[in-house]
Length: 165
Image 1 (cartoon, rainbow, N blue to C red):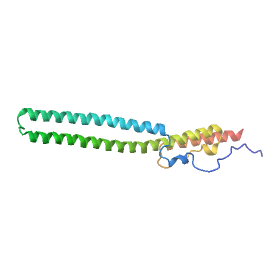
Image 2 (cartoon, one colour):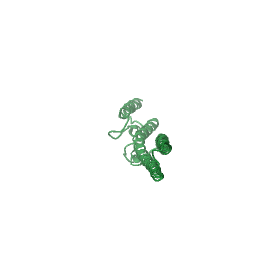
Image 3 (cartoon, rainbow, N blue to C red):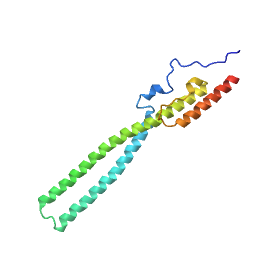
Image 4 (spheres, rainbow, N blue to C red):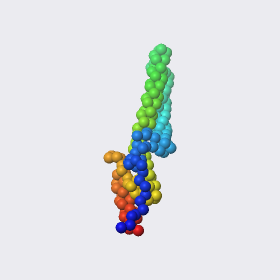
């Protein structure tokens, strides 16, 4: 019985890509781009909303001032200050919302990037003929579970073909 050439197994039997799973930045370039896109979209939408609110409250302020309904300058000043306070409050809420969206985008991009990174590493190992490392093991609940099953079937088929040679 002839021995088959065997690719050396890695010194540790860690799950493929597990050295990066604890890291928040698996693929920093992709994750930062995704987070930036979400934040820019939120800022644009928020700017339109706050601007629209401010425009309409200013129109209301001017209408009150010009209609003669509000003749007390002190009351008009108080109304103007309230509008300004509201705009500042909305701006602060938008800032907090952007931070929360950034954190959530980071979390969800990590849940997508982690499995994609593991697939990439699996295919690299398969191309080297390292069938042990090419088997893909994703955490339960990770995206692309069905793809991992297909890749593992592909690895099994390649390993069987390599053993027949």
